[in-house]
Amino acid sequence: MQNKTIDFQGKSALVTGGARGIGAATALALAAKGANVAVADLIMAKDTIAKITDMGRKGIAIETNVAKIDEVNKMVETAINALGHIDILVNNAGVVHRDTLLETAESTWDRVMDVILKGTFFCIQAIYPHMRERKYGKIVNVSSISGIIGGAVSKIGDIPEKTSGRSGPAYAAAKGGVLALTRWIAKDIAKDGIYVNAIAPGACETEMTRGFDYNVDALPIPRMGQPQEMAEAILFLASDISSYITGQVLNVDGGWVMS
Ligand SMILES: NC(=O)c1ccc[n+]([C@@H]2O[C@H](COP(=O)([O-])OP(=O)(O)OC[C@H]3O[C@@H](n4cnc5c(N)ncnc54)[C@H](O)[C@@H]3O)[C@@H](O)[C@H]2O)c1
Image 1: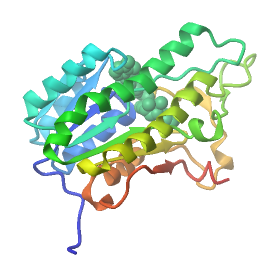
Image 2 (image 1 turned 90 degrees about the horizontal axis):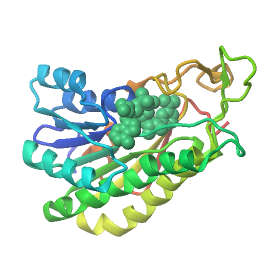
Image 3 (image 1 turned 30 degrees about the vertical axis):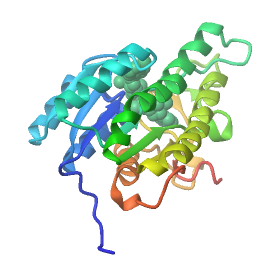
């Protein structure tokens, strides 16, 4: 077998939640390795697309709410029409909440579940026929260590009366659900040449974590993770370097889960 490198020339990717944070870093990292990239988000990801086209790749921004099945179907159709085909899907769109058990309202539960768990499912369901027809696909789901350890604890730095910013029960359940879904779908569609894996970020410096103190000094790697570091793990799972891997979760967490 030949040595392989990470090279996405001729490949096209669809990244959800790519207007900022981990999604934007992932879209740019894919483009830097040669991919054309469709970026779906609640808002038009104009900045991300401008950087992708500056690199000489094709990029398209698609305004989508991943929690709405009609919008997801349209997103996939638009991405395929614009880029010709989609080889890679990164399910990254997400929202967090940090309510306690008693504070978590039904509306919060529904919103978090809808975006993270239902959104991930809808996107995979919508792209599957296309990938099956091409007998090729790499799907990477962005879960969280919250879905493994049951919520990641942080303090809210500048709001002293509220001492715990632990990610809430809906978030932990949705991210844990993404891992179960990753394995279910991985078993189902490996026969079609489509491989499905997940990353579980620890505390990463984005808008989602701004103002929260994750006590990262206590981690084996004592600092916050950076969006680029999440993107690099996603690149590995989206590339043919990981050609014998499916249904796995890669913790990108500075050693949080193991410790
Ligand atoms: N930052 C962290 O420490 C951390 C840790 C673990 C997991 N994650 C996960 O990583 C992913 C990216 O998070 P981030 O830190 O970059 O956060 P972020 O808030 O900076 O970015 C999230 C993006 O998703 C988009 N989005 C939200 N709801 C959407 C919807 N319904 N449809 C389409 N797009 C939507 C937002 O507009 C935003 O651009 C999320 O799934 C998050 O749960 C983040």
